[in-house]
Length: 288
Image (cartoon, rainbow, N blue to C red; front, top):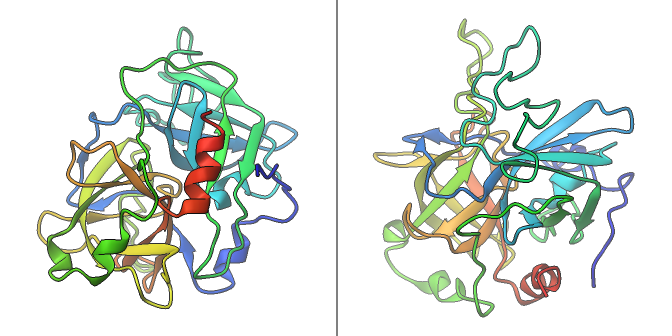
């Protein structure tokens, strides 16, 4: 059943109460993501049209955009705009608070509405709870304009495709790819350097850590982005896809959901599993 979002209930703040941090941008050994044109930067606005938050997500069809439940549940959010440019906010000017090339986050640049940018006021929440392990952290945004692309994000054909990995040996060899527009570097309080956010679609490979821990319990899986040739997620990457496989994969098996153990985005990353039977059926109901 589709669950129309109640904005008063679902809030990012709920996650913070249990020491889980919603995540934002790709960190570590990342590269520009020109492989997944369907991964977009979504910006949310309140009734007055004021910016209230941003996340990442994946277009599954010309109008169906998959993101996190805690993203569509940002308090006060009633409308959204999605940018699909790889460098959607890279020219952002902190003085004008605007990217003059793409219009981020205030408008769709001339000629991009319905091609590289779309609006929406229709959100659905799978049932985000803000508590682990069953966070219910999946959300759908229905775009007002169709975005026609040569490829879209793909879902598993059958549920449970990650189950066999729960008992597999050598999980460090199981590769996932994360993609998003989040913060790339978070600094210590005493560091003179500011936090770094390119507002640019980046991707990195990560390796599987666990599917069975108390924080997972078949609802989530966690990956490690630290180490040679690896990268993780941080603030702003929430809602972005976690692909099974290397950079060439379009198969979405998880939604970037939360981080654990390190406010500097150097801990482990958790994704909400989309291969759960109920979740997969709910997402597919928007594609029928």
